[in-house]
Image 1 (cartoon, rainbow, N blue to C red):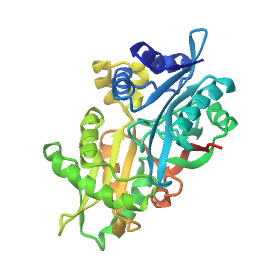
Image 2: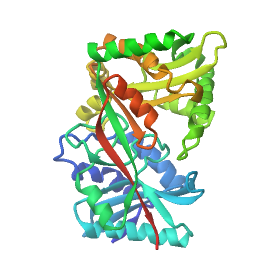
Image 3: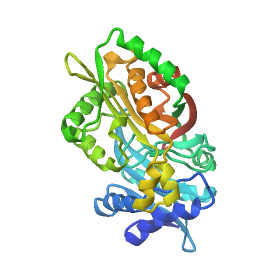
Amino acid sequence: MIKIVENKKDLKRFIFFIKDLYKSEKRYVYPIFYALQKELKRVVLEQKEYIAILSMKDGIVRGRLLFTYDNNKKRNERICYFSFFDTIDDIEVVKELFEFMEEHMKQNNVQYSEGTYAPYDPDTRRGVLISGFDISPTIFTSYNYEYYGKLLEEVGYVKAIDTVSLNADVCQKSKKRLNTISKYFSRSNDVRIDSMNWKDLDKDMDDVHQILSSATNEIVYQDAPSIDMIAQTAKSLKMFINPNLIKIARENKTNKPIGFCLVLPDFNQVFKKTKGKIRPLRMLIGKKKITKARGTMQYIVPEYQNTGLIGHIFKVIFEELEAIGITDFEAGTMMENNPKPINAFKKFGGEIIKTYRIYGKELS
């Protein structure tokens, strides 16, 4: 039986279903439930931008799904995006969830669905994990059981595109490669690398917006976020941010912003111990023991792509990582059809360690 999430009680069932589903999976990291509940309450119950559904049997939740509709730049049409797909290993549950969603699509004259995407943000938690199950998820990445992909394929979903995560050790070998790239770049470019400045956040966010607007015009799957969204994201991430790990590259002569990298300490190492609860003291202590970081965004304006600028920026970032005891770095997730950043990371020792698949389906 499908239950539409219509009230706070339903929403709690939707959110906390994963506590039972993943209670024996040691690598799974629970989200901060309070923050998730607040956000889903806003978009599902108040604004009703998203539809959340549960598959129920004898009063027990067996699966969940969240979906919405929006314009897709690549297809130039309105499509259905789905997320929060979690289920027991039962094809009947998956059929029930997706048959409901697809019937809703037909009623809204929508012929194509695609997922998984994190709500509110196309750059995080995108795709169903299909390789790399032996690695714990880093901050703002997803983790799921191996059977998810098989079940999606059984109800007619096929690969739309894969995204990948790369890993690089923060070690002398990587630093040596980055130093070589940086020296090569600096011979013909007069560029400085600045850290994010909380005291002049508006200026930094305006520069980031300029970079994203220029850098994303070649990428067909998304538009650059608005300046307001960038500023709002920066403020919402404040507890996770080390400003020394957020770098903006600017030309010295013109002060023109030309590159941006956002690296976050892997707070999943802390959240794994707090089990989805806010425990300030434990978080404060755990923050100092984080040994991994994740590059969540890296953008270079077109005229500086393939020049070595990305390596020049990461030379500075790796020095910062080493100074705070970070020994492991994960970059991604990157679309497989955007090889420039993937190849750039491979040059300084990055290797693909995880693959996520975005699935799509055309309704007949």
